[in-house]
Length: 178
Picture 1 (cartoon, rainbow, N blue to C red):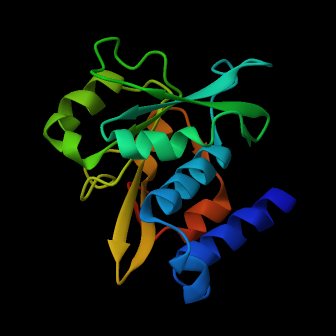
Picture 2: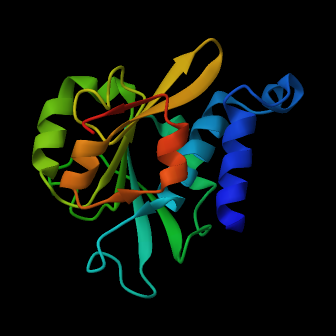
């Protein structure tokens, strides 16, 4: 329950409902990193995906600046698991080492093959590519009126065997594939 309250407070501050002073101190990369961390924290993988003592591997495809910002989350607890942030260059392994995958917008020319290679594997996909959730990704970050919001594709999330908290669903700007 305490985690839910923290998540709601963080999103309250980051979605523009909080004070301008709080937001002014955070960079866009820090805000994106906070969202990504909370998406992972409030997602559930199938029981056979993560074992006790495993780390949740967040692979970052694209921007090294974002990878650097996300790397500050290394070792943080996301639920019962420690987070491990890893750069990922090409996906030649089909992203088999990833539990979550952040796809930077500069990779949008590869989006269809990336999503196709993932198939129904339990990998939480997150991106700031325009219309990402509508195009089959799990969670898309969107920017509207100086606010960071997010959209969810429930069908692709379920296909991957992932569950997202109801609080997260309630905060989504749009939900596709109900």
